[in-house]
Length: 174
Image 1 (spheres, rainbow, N blue to C red):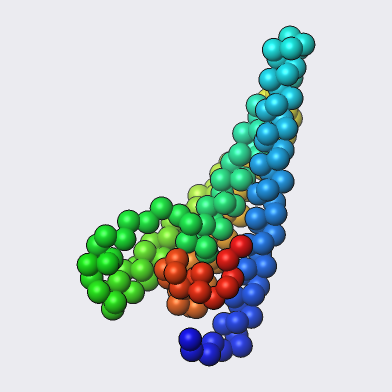
Image 2: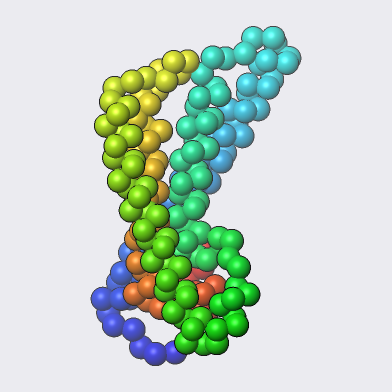
């Protein structure tokens, strides 16, 4: 294993720290989704008195969970990947294809950032009808997820962590 520059090591530590925070948030969001959904089921079917806000709150948590988890999966390579063609190309061709895939992921993240900015502006001060939660909070997940996806894709390219086995060998899996 070659020695990495201190800048790359610091970048890796910082990005993995951000992913650790995102992972902690994902765990709390999942707990909240389960709690809200369980509460809603009990209130609806046991007490026949459902809440108005629970579905919107659970949806908001689920969207944030999805965006953050997707970003974490880019860094840790836990996303879906079809490696048949990559493996046919040999070592050099596989690396080129992996870099291309990360550049496509980076492009998608930039679309998320651009579109998320437009959606946040469009939502303005609109509130979700049942919960009163600002609708823009829903779209901030696209900005946050897009930023973290872009950061993780760039980090994977710069560190050469382009395949799952390479990432796991560094000992930085979560």
